[in-house]
Amino acid sequence: MDTLQIELKSISKRFGDTQAVNNITLKVKKGSILSVVGPSGCGKTTLLRLIAGFENPDQGELLIGGTPIWDQVNNVPVQKRNTGMIFQDGALFPHLDVQQNIGFAINKDEGENSVNSLIELVGLKEKKTRMPHELSGGEQQRVALARSLATNPSTLLLDEPFSNLDIQIRKDIRTEVKDILKSYNMTAIFVTHDQQEAAEMGDQIAIMKDGQIEQIGDPEEVYTNPTTEFTATFFSQANMVNCDIDKKKLKTFISETDLDIDGDLNRNMRVLMYPHQLKIEPSSSSEEKNGIVKKRIFQGNTHGYTVELENKEIIDLIQIERVPIQPGSPVKVTYLPGEFVICFDKGVQKTFKVG
Image (tube, rainbow, N blue to C red; front, side, top):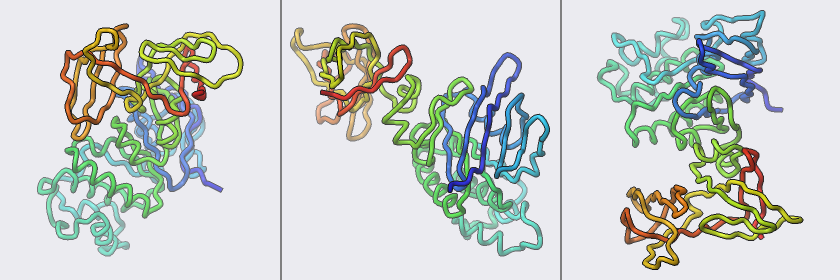
């Protein structure tokens, strides 16, 4: 049976007129990593600070390891919650070297061996006497991780710890950090605004918007089966296109798709179209063209296109081709659905099998 490490029940927090966290209920299993992703101002960092104890909720219940940490009766102080937190800048002590930063949180009885084992764990054995300003950004975050692990926390909270690093270092260090957390069987909540980073780090992923959790699940599930339009566009980065379902056909401006449904259905909805489900080709025929390229982005072996359809809808798509299509060019866009299509009827998700 899976053991819950963190449990939030109807947690809310308001700052003045701003509802930063709004009635969030959340469960995190022991030894798992939860990624929390959302746009700036959605409440991600406030959620972490409530769990750590830097802020107090207005209402709700918070349990860590099954023990009540905050409710209308209990309010366990920060230092007794047995949680560690890593910030964007690592927050190292500038006057202490690597081994002193890590050892700061260790009892003297645990001694030098614990410090050395943590230094080896994060791959900084040759730099243990370096000062923070002599380390790269990635190395500083490794020290911050080791210092957090030194206290043997039950839970580790990471607030966009890689946001100040360049792209390649971010890719490398998040793999290293995830491996270390897994080796410790550490329960962690990892906050980021980067969808790809969230998917790579998390066993589960929570999508936040306006202080609430829109959807939670494993990354593949959330990507392939978004339950709200916001999740579809923000995390799955899909297009939402107007459609008509007329009897057994799904009709959009660029396509008609047969559906395998019982009975007749006549309804206006919005259909989810992933960028990889759209095909683009130049068109010199006024009868075939259905859009104009507004933007092209070189992405290595692919190009990303933004196309304005003739009905004024805007779509994004990805294409592998040798000859790029220039902005301003007329094009024909074709929709290639998979086995199922996901639609939204006044915000309610509906899935149909393709006939």
